[in-house]
Image 1 (cartoon, rainbow, N blue to C red):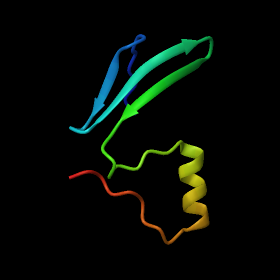
Image 2 (image 1 turned 45 degrees about the vertical axis):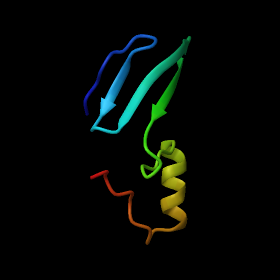
Image 3 (image 1 turned 180 degrees about the horizontal axis):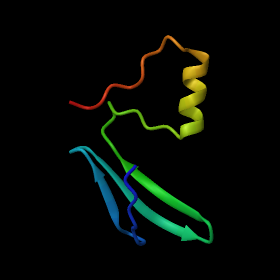
Length: 65
């Protein structure tokens, strides 16, 4: 696991198409924004797990080319 420190307004780029931006920090909560093309699925982890529990035959999202 890669661990990074970012400040408000700073971002992290994943691959060539996904950017994660720190929008707000309030106490223990951090709001992030994610810029990604429409063909890239973005889910909270608990929702991702729920989708795959309900449809175990569904393949995981393919990485962007």
